[in-house]
Length: 203
Image 1 (cartoon, rainbow, N blue to C red):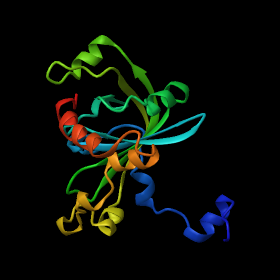
Image 2: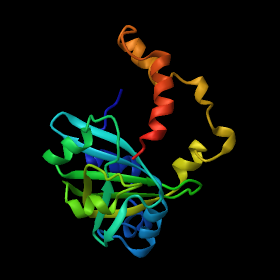
Image 3: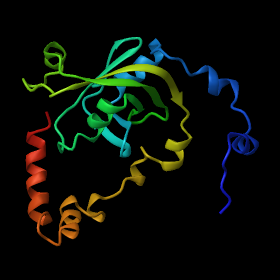
């Protein structure tokens, strides 16, 4: 395998980015980029810490990532598995990256910035759903915001109905846990309880 080891080697292969690839990147959230964020019900959150990198899926109602001002985003930390991998990383290293998806759109939006974890009572209360507040809110100061062209979405046929995978064809979380624990935990009971319990504890 031939390894590319320098920026110069990369540039010799790929060349320089065009004007459109550069002018689209700005440090602030322009009105057009705000529209993408407010329409998005899903993003991936990348963080980094002493143990390495982490990428976590985040989803909620469209606009769940709030545009507080042109340089600040706020994301509630809803109920999950309590691993707090992303939060642990942010506490130790503020660098984060987001990639927003909008169902049906070929355009994604990328955000790079620095974050902190807030437990401010007023901020948490402002994100309450059915009286349930998030335990914390991730506050992100943007450093780079830009759209990504749709080639990856087109190639993957992500939104095409005929490309959807039948979940029954995939391993279930319970089967994975059973395999890893030699059937001490997991299994069908886990899948049955999750299917009912998760819907009742989304927030």
